[in-house]
Image 1: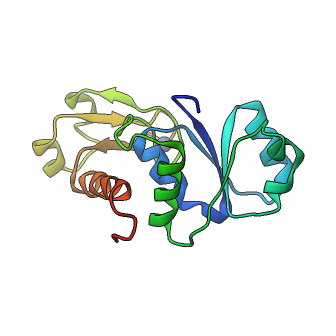
Image 2: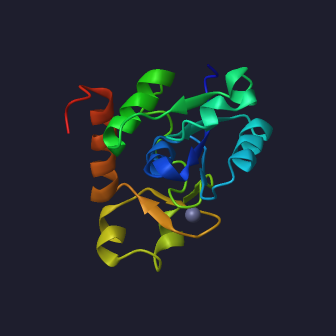
Length: 163
Ligand SMILES: [Zn+2]
């Protein structure tokens, strides 16, 4: 496996997109139902397909190994993440806080003065590190939401029966 895998997430396991972006892995969300398009995209951009669709596993490019695909077994997003992380031996602390959770764009560092009018006053007083998405201009900081997500990511690595 490459050290820095990129992903394409089928809509039937859509929650995985946010978690993988959270870890810093470049992840496309595929909302359509045209399997051929998704497979073509995976091949063109060298992405690992994550899906619950058993039909995709029968595609020629998948069976002959040209496209790496993981068939997700569980319905629970937590268990799905556990499967992806353990199958590919992913690092949950790969590059946290580096990709927009909504757009999959690499975030840019922003200085405190640049975000003064863009974040709530309480956040501005307590946080010193900010990142901005160049596409949607959403500002990220290491607040409580981010900490909760990081904690959850660590949980995916430990006992899989833990919720
Ligand atoms: Zn964005």
